Figure 1: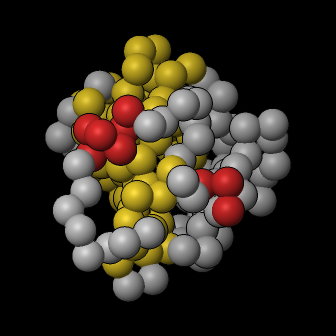
Figure 2: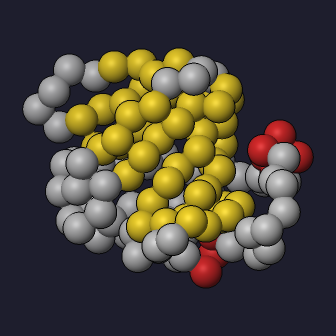
Figure 3: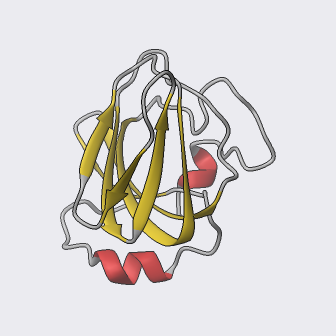
Length: 125
């Protein structure tokens, strides 16, 4: 990954094949910048014990569910940080393109392993 060149988000998004399968497009300090397509409800409830997780909606709407809080819908241009240790899950009834900024150690679905869980190596192009 060459982080010294301009990255076109739309061109990178066109490379995304599967829903709920983040791909690393860049890095800054100890953080990965990832893109993911969301559609459906496949992500399990999970948390990241030691890492915050930033969600930025590039296109579409994303239902954010935070344990013991009212659900809310994020729209194009919205940004939200899920604090470390907070149970959450996301879904979307239509195609949604998101950017995630996560510490390099952040596991896709925390300690919860499901058929959609991707290792960090599987998140690299």
